[in-house]
Length: 308
Image (spheres, rainbow, N blue to C red):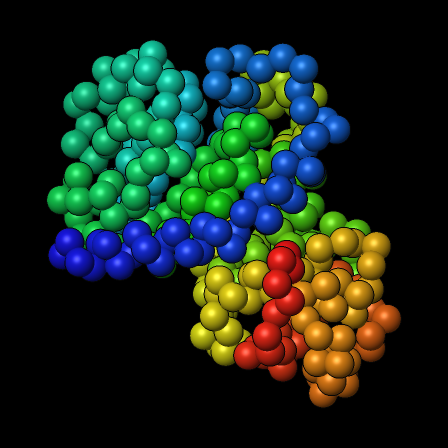
């Protein structure tokens, strides 16, 4: 078991390196609208009970499922989950909130409140803590603090093999990027990263008044059903995302000009000709499939030293 865990941790580190540029896109999406004041740990607590029910419904049937809630806060969604979920694991970083929740749910055998930083725990270990198989797939839900959205997304994508569905409330600007289509200004590396691991659905958007204290931005709820596409596309996930990082390196540049920063110019021209991609297009105009085809044509081509 230890050797299997070591392998898993090694693979996770490789994926983490390749996902960091998508992490930066999330940071960019929230820079201009970051709230001036944040409560401790950046929480904006959901107070709209109707929205909480819609989030719960987005998880579909959970009677026999393990649900992982990230940052339950004051428990608005937690109380509803506790009534329906086969088992609920809620990870809360704030010590005072975690203690209050532990007291409230002390009599619920199907609820585990864990005081922990989600970024430092592994889903397999959380499952083992409740005597579940470490290979079980969970449903993830959470109202994510905006300042840490990128880190949480990164962590979830790293552990996608143990996740069935993700329902998250995020800043609307980040949701726009996650759910973007090609040929739109929001389409970029973050979009491609999310699509490589999941199918993304935008569900609904909430105003600041749905939270306490109200943030200075709107929030959107997304559902991401985990459907890994790397094998179907015939790509190595970490290598493909490294290629995509290069393709989207400078948004104003054409795909050809970005790719020649990392590959020989002749190789890039030949690859684009074989895939039928015009050299003058930008990466944001290519679907995940088209990006994968271009990557495969360049796979094995030596990269320039010092390239992104």
